Image (cartoon, rainbow, N blue to C red; front, side):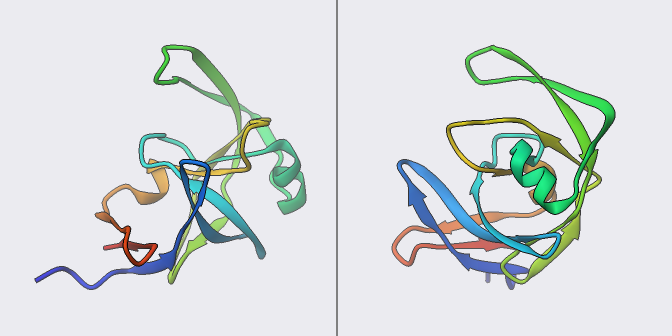
Length: 125
């Protein structure tokens, strides 16, 4: 028997990317759900909108292509996906151009994420 999900929400595709509705610091948005990224990222503009100002520390990592990326960190706001909410310890602020914001592995760590492709649903248990 599968565990009862903590969160369940619909998803939509943005090209080949899975996006989910989120609520961040009282603002509704759509984020790309990226289970391969270690950090939740938001654009500069969205960070300003929700009042997240980088505090001088950075996070460094590599993209799948090997390209090194360093992003400034801001204190994390509360993020809600479906019926599950938690405060992120930190989020990265990056002008991503290609897409809006990413919910990363840091938010989903310790959970099982299941995609129900036929029903366009994401379950977090």
